[in-house]
Length: 87
Image (tube, rainbow, N blue to C red; front, side, top):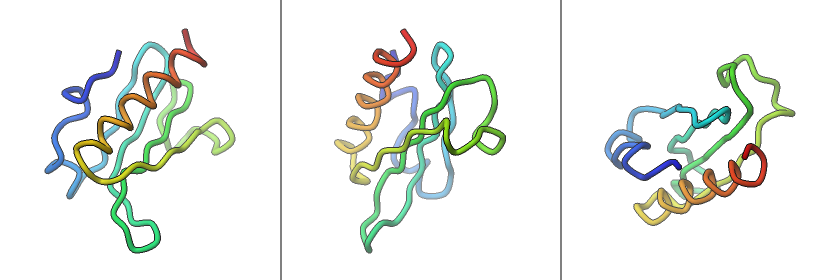
C-alpha cells in the first residue's frame, strides 16, 4: 500500500515531480495549474516502463487540490486504482 510518507512532503512538489512504483503499477505525482488553481496531477500506468516511454493510452490521470488533504486523496486514489486494476 502506498502511504503519504512514500510520496514525500508538500515542499518537494514546489520544484520537483515525484515518480514511484508499487507492485507493477507506476505512478507520477506533480504540482500543476488548472484553471488558475494549483493542483496535484496524478498519473498511473502499468510498469515496467517510465512515463515518457509509456503510451498515453496506458496512462490514467486524476486531479486533486494542492493541499495535504489533496495529497492524501491522491494516495487513496492510487491505492484504490491498484486494488481494482493490479491486484
